[in-house]
Image (cartoon, rainbow, N blue to C red; front, side, top):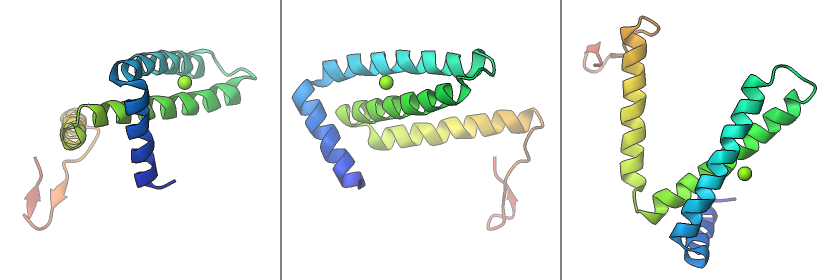
Length: 114
Ligand SMILES: [Mg+2]
């Protein structure tokens, strides 16, 4: 499936079911993801482990789809990408501060990146 097809599906979903209904659906999917995370990480290694893993992946996909729809609904595609970059930088800085990661080096600037 192409990105254009996914965008078209999200547009039709938002138009057909409405923003509020999709926000509620996002709540539902996030609840299902919380349960899936709990089962996978905190149920121990049972015979259901593969089933729990599969369910976790499915629920992560559901939440990603709903989040993408909400991003589209509020027209925040670029802002969202900027926040993701800022958040990754924040995590990287924490990892560097705690000695888990080296500060990246930019050879073009011939110095470490802050
Ligand atoms: Mg689901």
